[in-house]
Length: 221
Image (tube, rainbow, N blue to C red; front, side, top):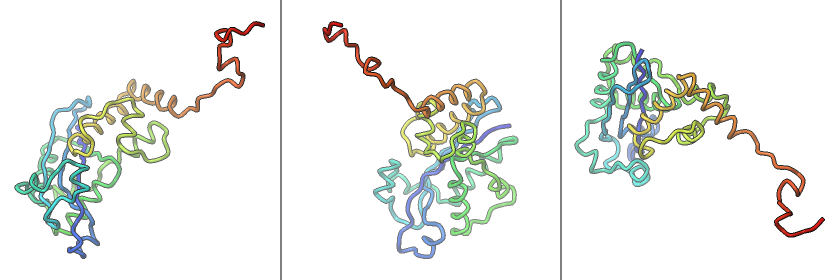
């Protein structure tokens, strides 16, 4: 079993496209993915920028967030070509499971396919049926009830973020490291111990003697 971890970066649809904006809201501008083998070691990656269809520029907020500029996507493939490239890459794997951080990426892809009327072959559609929500799995495994941002989860697990955040390939690789941690018993226990330590309130003694060393002040008994 191989494990594919996907991440997307997005840009706002222009207000001039009111109908499309109502249906989808955002457009994909980068698809990044990592594939791990059955030992959770990286064996490949996928990365492409995507040219938006319903906005002629990358909005300043999203450009600052992702580092992706309007110029960078001018010669990038459109969404239909890019999603076909990604699904073709996934289909080349023997028995692979696809993971995302939360359910937002599959939701985005599904809405964008609909609004752009992309017609996909049955074998590609089957790859969109069941993406695992690793954000939920991470919380369940480490007994954390609230949803966590990826950066917070990385910090709690005691890992380092791989490169700059909000780059789809970097985020996918970082999520892959968390997946490896959760699916490896020794690493999972170490992460769980760290989470327990972080979430356990620290107590201090109530006596002044537990807080100060009065001998250093020169007081006599």
